[in-house]
Amino acid sequence: MKIATWNVNSLNVRKQHVLDWLAQSGTDVLCLQELKLPDEKFPRADLEAAGYRSWFTGQKTYNGVAILARDTLSVDEADVVRNIPGFDDPQQRVVAATVDGVRIVSAYFPNGQAPDSDKFAYKMQWLDALQAWLRTELQRYPKLALLGDYNIAPEDRDVHDPAKWEGQNLVSPQERAHFAQLIELGFVDAFRRFEQPEKTFTWWDYRMMAFRRNAGLRIDHILLSPALAETCTSCEVDRTPRTWEQPSDHTPVVAVVD
DNA sequence: ATGGCCGCTTCAAGCGGA
Picture 1 (spheres, rainbow, N blue to C red):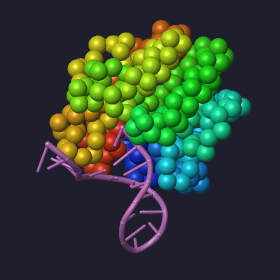
Picture 2: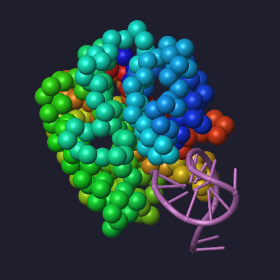
Picture 3: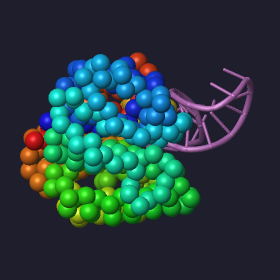
């Protein structure tokens, strides 16, 4: 099963990119973030025509997440979850579903803005809630994948210019400690299980010709539970959609699991 | 050296992103 995550920065604008990329990548399960549309505007019919069913939770203007699954895969409707249970939050950042026996979580972690801001405090609270929930999810679903825009670059090698970024949002010690806590829960960073090209990133600022300079960060990740990690045979960043006309500032991350 | 983009709201300029 080929699983992937992609922050599309408006599904309205990127719908055709998503359809094109699904067709050319052969992805079975695609997690999307930053839909930036309310549920009634979700292009469910277009995706169904392309052979994918959708589970999502959206809102106007901001946030919004989805899971698309090839319609040949079995999905247990009864255990689809929207938002982190017990964490009251108007921001739509999490959707989870079980696809062919694999628990899939599509997550859009808060940006945090700056380490001394209210938004950063919210990011920390959100991370605490996520971790507490995942602890129980891991027990319930031995095969679990957490895919999404984490808004955390876990290590300096995930940053194009670590000196320039030191202490800033997305790379701060507090954020990295949260990522490390997920690893302590048993999660495995699928990308790091394999040999990778140096300076592989998943996001590049729209400004400053950042993509052309490869001035990016690796902030989109696929973490796998121990049992699922055992089955993982590849994980790659696919830069091609970032080269297309009017691209998202993020590009997909893809893994193959069983 | 600085900051330079993009999408959304709704038609203008501000917010949020990262």
